[in-house]
Amino acid sequence: MNWKIDSVDYDFKNDKFIANVISGSGISFLVEEDYYRQMMDNYASSVWRDELKTAVAQKVKQVTGSDAEVIINVSHMGRDALTYHDEVPSYSTVSQKLSSEASIYIKGNFSATRYLQEMLEIKQWIVEKKYDASLTFEPKDKDVYFYLPTEDLKKIKKPEDLNPYRLQNN
Image (cartoon, rainbow, N blue to C red; front, side, top):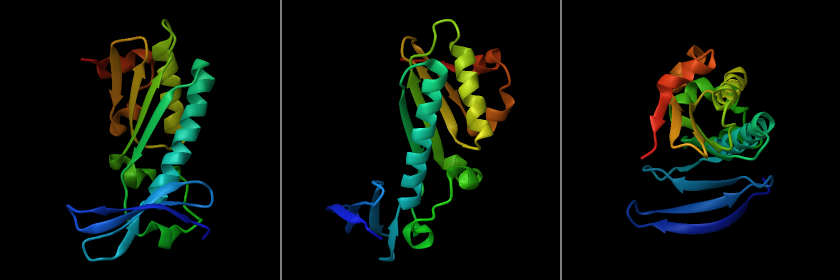
């Protein structure tokens, strides 16, 4: 499998070892024991996080013209390394099952006048790619952010449809 153990830690609270492993392709993931002392890992979700982060960052740069901070969360642990090995399906093929456990956060340099249009374009691309996940936009120069639940992504069709999802930063 060409995987390397990067570190091993002991979780005193749960009485188990946790290893950080790096795959041959550079994906970092965790391997640990479950409550029945069976090995489980988050290899597949680490692959999905990497896939989404790379694709979303490229799309945001294409739309806004600048780099953005992109944070992906796909909370999924299981015996994925044994199931998928090097053949992890793309996130779009499993996203409907995992959408309630997934989020995409984008903090970027959106246009001062076209930021709603830029966010809409990125949102539409995410829907087209079937990257089902809740979506948060945080423009760097504004004191607001936009939180779009997964189930509402397809309902948003025009820039003004984003306004109900506008929230104030504290």
